[in-house]
Length: 270
Image (tube, rainbow, N blue to C red; front, top):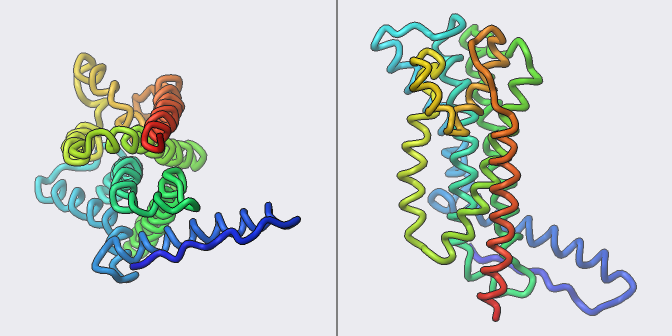
């Protein structure tokens, strides 16, 4: 799919408004290009991205049912699986797809109207929309099955989910800086992402482990984000969230990533 880059036109008294309009059209073009090229060059293929969290939920719930494992909290295995898969995948997809977006759209940054940050921002918007659509679809399916997916503390669950998105943006920004120097980092990060997903407590309740093991598991920020969401469903869980640690990860990774991107971008343009 070709990307039509809008021209800013001659400077005038309306140049600021023209630049804003051009910037929005660039973002719109980048987002549409991403949605068209992600799967088989069709907008219908974009639905695959939305359906992945649903697939994860069913796979985890089916595996637990096959092994006759009761849900660690609540009455529904599917609700338990959803509370883990949603925040973990929100982080994983955003942090990975921002990096892939830069690799796929790098030639577009040679246009003066398109910057690396524009490509990153457009991919973040697409991933956030995809994540929200996935959440809505999961809630719809759970309601249709006669289950109650509404958390007891909605604010806590939403804050945990939004923090997972924020951390995904921060780590994804760092990945963008790394991938421009070491292109092979994409494969390395995919492997790391799988390990983080397995150790993030999506398929188990980490607080059920012995204290010595649980202590080391909590160094994984994804696990604490999953626990944050689950705490909204069952406030009585023996979970303590280290909010300072999580916010250090979120703001630290975002600051580091932007600083690295700016430094690498300057070297690349020199």
